[in-house]
Image (tube, rainbow, N blue to C red; front, side):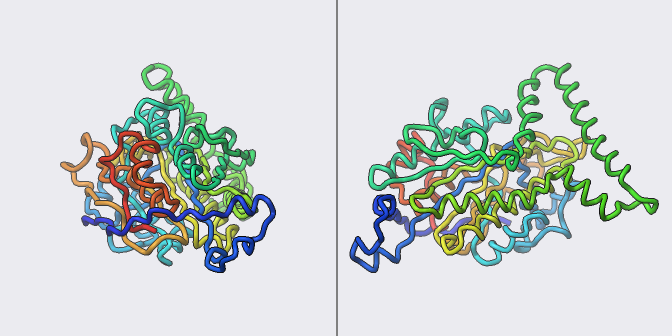
Length: 413
């Protein structure tokens, strides 16, 4: 089950000279050529799943003979949305599945940053800065800075705080949608990192999280009718309590962000943070809710951006993956490689990106994790080069310092 991406030509520049005239209220006819008027402005959206999203559940390797044995109760097999004979998608990723079937989506199922860390703090800094120990700026801001030397570029971060990936020398906008991003989901993840080396506090936190899960389960039992099933009214109430109407909220969020991108002088490059992917216990329920939110967000973006979708790429990544084996609390622990999603109307159809290392015992990283086969920087570089027009020299030196060995993955756009 070894796959490789198909190489393709490097487009040196796809950026369009649009922002200046539009910002002054001038029509494109001012330029004087029909060819220019027909060219659309490229858009890029980066979605970061914070907490280490489980790639083996995002894109279950249904054709890998060792998958079910490692995952047992967490294995997603018959219910997976099939991509091909080897891979499927989590059943909540319906919009993503539709895009892949239409040739507008691909998966990279074994990706990681180099010198990966299993600490949320360190791994998120590495993912967003991508500059060794320097965390003073993020690679997305540095990419926009490089592009802005030729044409105006607008950046937007969505969330309560501008993420590191969007910070740097170029001034960008930010917008917080309030509860729609569900920032409270990140608190257990952050506390866990702080308590990681303290056996007493770490154990206490684990007991607390388990109590919270049991409390939610008890809510469900209390809502059951005499038949033992949830009544429709109580099902709706409990869903609102535990999920916060997340699909509806996520769809609205995606449509709103699309509006920011489509307006005159709107955002060219957007970073969105989604929390709540640290699934040490009761992974099935927690991940189902969060991936449903992600899927509705993608659907809202696609619908909201309309015709501009054909010029858009959405890249979904996380700081690291999770263990190949299920743990004792129906969850998984911090791992290494995970899955990235590459979506958008600007994509060329294609198979999986990168090679699949398999889940054979001798191929697991440190006898516990999916082994990475693709450097995330290569994925970032490919999108920035072919889709946004960042030149190779800038990518290797300024955007991702000292990264010449990580060649861009080409042929996606």
